Image (cartoon, rainbow, N blue to C red; front, side):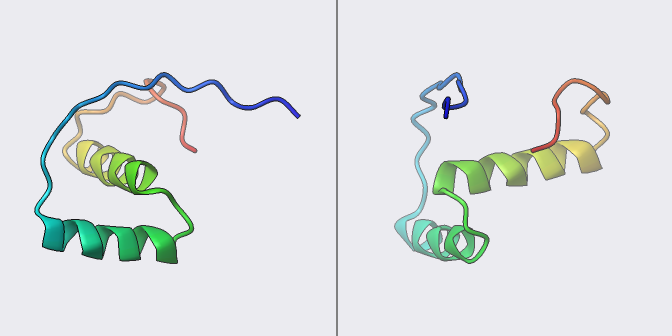
Length: 60
């Protein structure tokens, strides 16, 4: 089986340790990695604000 190729960009942003613990818990409940969980939060916010043009990204 071939692994999906994903471009990784290191953002280096800081996250309050207390929020990180909670985000890890939430990600675990959704069977996601922390980075995937954060990516989905950003995608949902961008969609709600109407900034994402349909077809820019395919939903996972």
